[in-house]
Length: 162
Image (cartoon, rainbow, N blue to C red):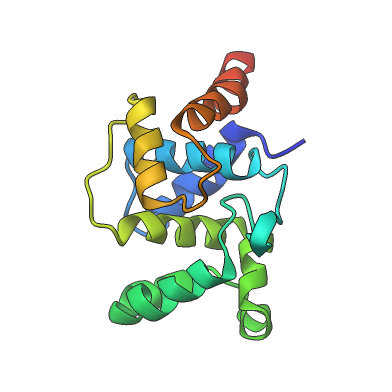
């Protein structure tokens, strides 16, 4: 059992995007769908190749975001660092990906944001899946069809039940 999609969206993803002054329905849907595909909405917090958290971000990707993207924007870096726990981040920065939902969400958003490409409409699920495949997902196992199926199974089913 993972995290309730509606609660992840409303209690974590939306507030994190708002905190970063980056909220849009398109971004919110993209991140909810990414969590559905990558970890089964948090069913797995540690995946293959040491990927961590609801977005299954590798330590290498995490480090690249800090070294090659956030290092160029100190104000944004400071804002994101503010989401991390004070002491634990210094000792085990990658562990924050598995234990801190807001921090994990912010880093996932940075993976997309650094590409600088316009987001697909929140109602265009196939477009969202293609965007994920092009800008987030580096493993060959994930397909557009798998992405759509995960979203429909985990997120849409939850919305119908609510």
